[in-house]
Each structure stands twice: as structure tokens, then as C-alpha cells.
Image (tube, rainbow, N blue to C red; front, side, top):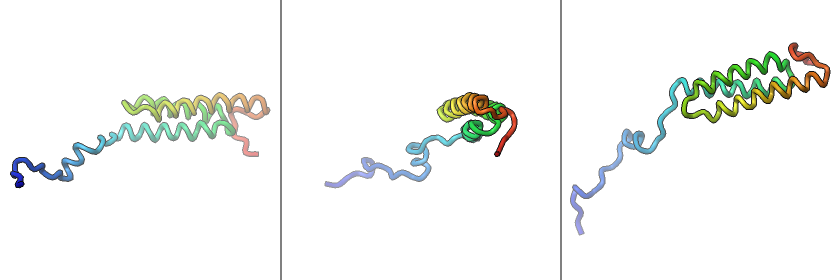
Length: 108
């Protein structure tokens, strides 16, 4: 049984593979949004113990910027906003209950 050249599938080139199989790459804006959301997560966790009114507000600002820039892939932006707000809120409550200043950084 012989096959015609017309019935055989053409092999995929690297360009065909990239067009068909790989996802679209993130734009620079989406990458910056992910970095801002990651920064918001880190600052939200830090605001649990150190200056929740300063770090928490900066974290919330970074999270809102990251969420607004993220476009269709907004999951990390939403997570960053939740972590930043919860870190600010819980950090402020802990600072008031423990008698620490909510504005200054007390390392002692």
C-alpha cells in the first residue's frame, strides 16, 4: 500500500508549533501588573507586624494598580488585593490591641 504525497501530513515547523500549541505571551503591562500584585502580597504580609497604616496603604495602592493593569488575567490581582486589605486590617487591629504604634516601625 503506497501513500500519495498529497495525503501525507506536512511536518510542523517551529513557527507552526508556536502558533498552534503555545499560549500567547503576556504583554509588558500584564507582566508589570503581576509584579505589582506580588509586591502588594509581600507588603500586605509585612503590614501585619510593621507599620500597618503605611505599608498597608502602599500595598493596597499597588494591588489596585496591578488589578487595573492586569487585563484578562486578573487572578493574581484579586489575590493581591485580598492579601493587602486583610494584612492592613488585621495588622491595624493587632497594633491597637497590643499597644503598638500603627504608623511607626517598631523593631523591638
